[in-house]
Image (cartoon, rainbow, N blue to C red; front, side):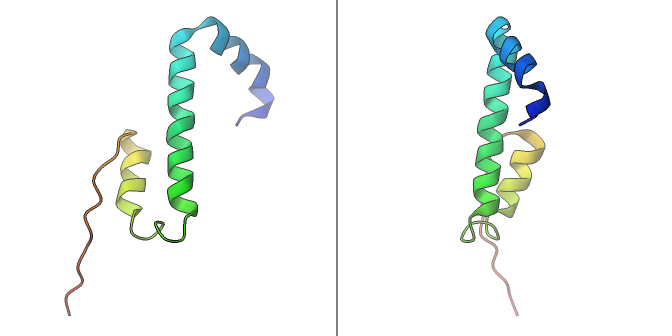
Length: 69
């Protein structure tokens, strides 16, 4: 992520514990979202969870929807 800022990010992570924590949390969240989006089994059923992660950074329980005819 942001290869043009790799050196600056590395320096900030070493010198600023708050930046390092937030950067690591962002990467974990990004990995979780990417995993849900790229998994063909969960990509459709987990859309609410994906949206919640993108907006708030926290998980929302996935409630299955039932279609009625």
